[in-house]
Image (cartoon, rainbow, N blue to C red; front, side, top):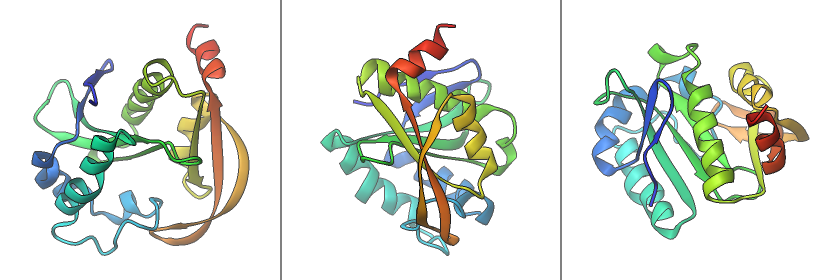
Length: 181
């Protein structure tokens, strides 16, 4: 089961099918999707959020391969502002997106810290790896702030096309040493 997580400003609630309508309204914007994995359909279909949650996210959660949360401000808990997930893939363990009105406020950094804690402290994985488009400085800043380092570069398919990418890595020991400073 995916638990509810909290940060100073956010409540991370487990994703459910009832979230599809709000996600469908927030998600399909080029500024949000362009650096996401190329498997995200673009243009985004009118039933894209519901189809993704029903056929991909919920089955992966049930298998124990993924953990998905909606991000909600504690001050407005009914409003979804973004999503974040963890995955058991070898070189892609975390993904996220944030609605345009809430970008640039440090909210995704808070969410990333909460799920990184969960990855290492509750799920007990030894390493977290995340791919990022080199052209995505906001996402890269989160990795830098968390103490991650680049372990590989490659080309990856993103919604915006094939782009140079980096694989960022953080070990549980590195995370704990930064966390308890």
